[in-house]
Image 1 (spheres, one colour):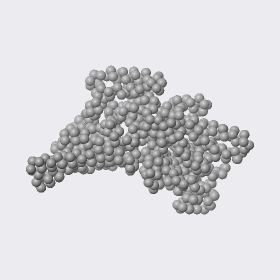
Image 2 (cartoon, rainbow, N blue to C red):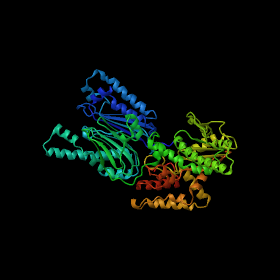
Image 3 (tube, one colour):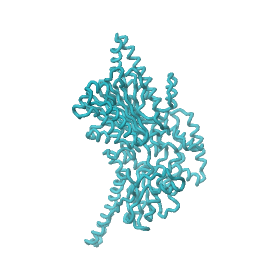
Image 4 (cartoon, rainbow, N blue to C red):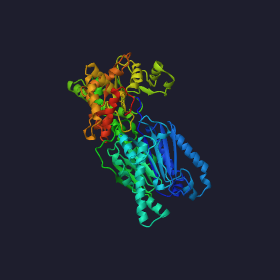
Length: 630
């Protein structure tokens, strides 16, 4: 209901043939650039704050630029950067030059492309934080371009490690620090090869080319990645032509790739690659956790194990909410999430499906809604079959009776309609809240006032702000007897620290409900005890830390917390009875078999850094600093 922001999206393109090949076959020098644009545009949902694109030309002569980059801020950043790029290309007048000039001099016509869509989960914004990042050098083999979909939980320790080596990062951010860390390892690899080839009698340009041709990318990644704690897909390109994308050992953040004899493509989502490259689902491969897809300067492609694969923690929220529903597996999983909720919905209606209208909150919950309806249809089929058998046994089964039984159907309607994006920033206080109630509109005349229950499903209820300010008020205008709001995901109880913007305890309605229940039952000592334990955890080694915040939820059942959430989020003037149903953890795992990572719901973080940050988030809440993100 209240849109969750995302952790970023990545896109990479590596052309494996000479540039003239693409001009001849596809009719444009911009074949690779066009693919990058499509990969980024079709992942626009993943980044609303900024975007950036980079290009490396592998055949530029000395004195000519070989690394190009454009970045922009705002939701229209993709259009802006590609408009700027196209303007540069148009000014270059490619039609006036020969193939050699275009290959060596034309801006943004190259072999390697990198794109990034950004949403900040750290609160830092501005052009200084927009990917790709560059580490420039006069030596192509020492120049590095970097972007990623990641959030590191141990930035302080990585920073200390970098500084201890004598480096001086100019910004305290995980991207800059990782850039410097990788840059240091790249420098060491260059030095190693420099001495090796010098001893072999090489010098000057011959030695420089030998270094470029023999960089050991896995060793560079092995020198840095083991120190990272977090969820990540790190994409890098070296000025001389090597390229890689590395995924974290738990598979927290998603990465997919496609390769043929012309091109290698990397993106955060599988259907994006399928659509852009017009290939079958089986042609697009998921990058294994802890592995990197590496393309050498010469165009050799390999999958290299960089760090050991750890316990599977592929992000379930990625499947529930963020990724494109056009992915075949995600579509099936979202339908299954809805199907899991059919039984509790029927129970919440006291079995009265006849006097109920079913709908969904636009737009991402539509697939889960289809699954829920299918599950309820199965329940209705069972009831119709039982009624027919009973009538037959009693001798009352007539044509009219049979028609009456078969006419019992679910009443499925489009009740909620997403209205125009109202500019509530122009108002203040109660006026702003009043405007927020009109973000959605309703379809009148489909609910029988005072008789029908109204069931609406959404993919998640995290903060509850929009539910209270808009959704429930809007639905109550139809005068239903009861409103049942269904969440296809479980209660979000714990902050994310791996890249999704859910970092503060106070923003979760489930947490606020649990705290309210503790206070009502006179058990505020639990909060005090959790605070003390969280402080004690800060000095413990990774192997001994635990998630102390779980104790806040322990005294209450899921249903008890859901009931409290419903009470807290229901506006005081609401006439209908309001119930809220959440997906269970068991239901989640039955539906989303591919992605068991559930730390937002269970508190079981896959890395020590995650556990440390949830404890720190509660300390910030307890001490009155609820807006701190770590």
